[in-house]
Image (cartoon, rainbow, N blue to C red):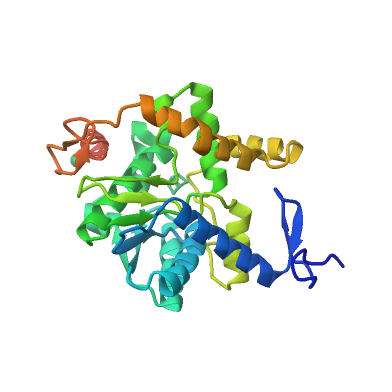
Length: 313
Ligand code: SF4
Ligand code: ZN
């Protein structure tokens, strides 16, 4: 039987990039230390009063909620924590997501709010399927989630939004943006996106150095229930195909994902930040939230949705 590299006990988990085996207890310590170090290295909670954790019910955000609630209670007891879940209204999926979130928040004793798009905003992500937006439904869904999460965190008085973006997510984005030479987007791929604008909440990614597999294993090791289904709208997505390709590269070049991420954050990002100006924000004429143009991308999306509904009725 293979032994844990740290304690010699029975090994349970293989850390691919450093090619070592760990037992469950040592893996949990390794994982929590890594999240703590990421938080400290980037000053993610420096001066924070209230952290809103975006939770979907999936492995990443459920692992995030567990580790952040533990670290906050042990190391940052002055910081308040709240979980936010957006029920997207995707048939055969969103109900289950909400159930998991309620279960885990109850288990961890974390306060939470559920924002149901259908009852609170009058539409569902599934409605986008009958509009021209169906071709880029994940992009539109992303716009909704980013906007809502920021607005709800602002309304709840939070000064940080923590998301479960992991190393695989970030490397997939880097891969796409480097290929396209999309400098404006590359400069936004970072562990913390600070904001001085009171309506634009600082975003943090405490799991940015951990892989999807590590998050899954942490959730399982900690006995956290996670969603056992994937979104029915994701089929054939380019994002999934890119992740598969990156997995193949990682298989051939061990440590590829970590190397790409670290090169970006340490070497490229500081240079890009010097040459790419921060975008000028104005208030959206419709909703009053920060926007790059007179009407924000969320309000434009909603008006397209309304126009499609009118023309089909
Ligand atoms: Fe939204 Fe696409 Fe994720 Fe489904 S897979 S929840 S549509 S972003
Ligand atoms: Zn708006």
